[in-house]
Image 1 (tube, rainbow, N blue to C red):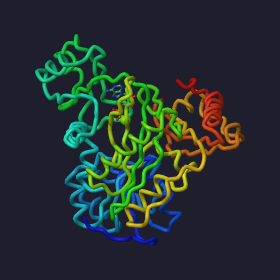
Image 2 (image 1 turned 180 degrees about the horizontal axis):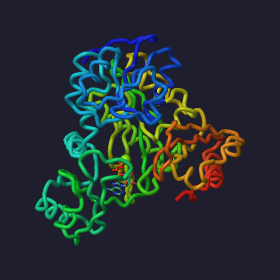
Image 3 (image 1 turned 45 degrees about the vertical axis):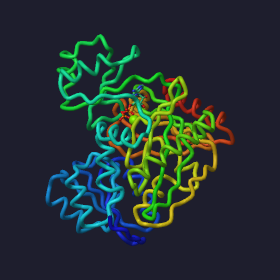
Amino acid sequence: MSSKVTLPGSTIGILGGGQLGRMLTIVAKRMGYRVVSWVGGPDNGPAGLADLIIEDAFDRAEGLARFLDEADVATVEFENIPKPLLETIAAKMPLHPGAEAITIGQHREREKDFLSSNEIPCANYAVVDSVETLKTALAGLPDRGGILKTAEFGYDGKGQLPVTREDDADRIWAEFDAPRAVLEEKIDLAAELSVLVVRGQNGETVTYDPAENIHRDHILDVSIVPARLDRSILDEAEAIALRVAEALNYVGILAVEFFVSGDGRLLVNEMAPRPHNSGHHTIDACETSQFEQQLRAVCGLPLGSPTPMRPVVMLNLLGDVWVDSEGSPDWPSILAMPGTTLHLYGKAEARRGRKMGHLNLTAETIEEAIALQNRSRELLKIPPLK
Ligand SMILES: Nc1ncnc2c1ncn2[C@@H]1O[C@H](COP(=O)(O)OP(=O)(O)O)[C@@H](O)[C@H]1O
Ligand SMILES: [Mg+2]
């Protein structure tokens, strides 16, 4: 791994073209960097703030040549970048996180194998690549059943199917239509948490206070910080997340998602080798945002302070808000509420379930922040918090 300081004035190369890269770009521009975004396809808005956008597919030599020519240092805002491409880039310039960590995070089987071989607690699972292996795995499920998940390219609950012991393996495997999957036991969830860890090139680490995450239809709905759980559980989650970062010899920002089971166990669900939706509150509620930390780590600069400044709720704004308000959400009423900041990602088309932006709602207490969040839902016609 090459290690060096990349100073303002240099060019950050971002692989991926979504909102995470856009928010990193905003910070990079503020701090005097240039940005080249290789988005791998037609840009639909989020990457539009970069100095240069490369739309070539990730297997195009022209795209690679331009990226290598322009960028001084590279990072990802999206984990599904082919490993050979990551390795080619890493041979020419610093890439943080490294190809190995990114490719573990892009594949559920590799991720689970990594966790279990490092004795990090996760849900019981079996690898499935045929009707036969599915049959055996189904037979081993507990009464609560399980969730079949594609090994690759799943997000926001896509590529997932709840199953039980009684299900017909032939039918499910034909319908599921993926070459490889993991079957995971269903956890009786008391809560979900995530921890962001930042690790610098010199091994320095910081962790953010865990976020309590509530999902709706498998998509993150809100993140609540501080989480309303016992401090002992939160401390344990931070300690496990740090172990994950150390075991990966990670550089950059890493998100570790956890399940808290009904019987009080903490299990790692998955990890993301990039900034995370459950870290968007850090932009307005912490001394340093997750995007600035990514930039600092990638550039070999000192890490910033993750200290929380105010209790906060992050409320995701899905395309449903636009669809249900016939195109004109009531932003003036939202922005009239003190403690509210609006983040929109510049996406042209609003579709149900598509992440279009988020609100950060800060207050003196977490109860007041939750109340502000409830008021925002009413104004935007979002169904009440679960
Ligand atoms: N084994 C499980 N037991 C209970 N709930 C689960 C399980 N796996 C996933 N879920 C629910 O589905 C959500 C999305 O699943 P996840 O594996 O994180 O995939 P992704 O975020 O990539 O869509 C989780 O946050 C959780 O709410
Ligand atoms: Mg997830």
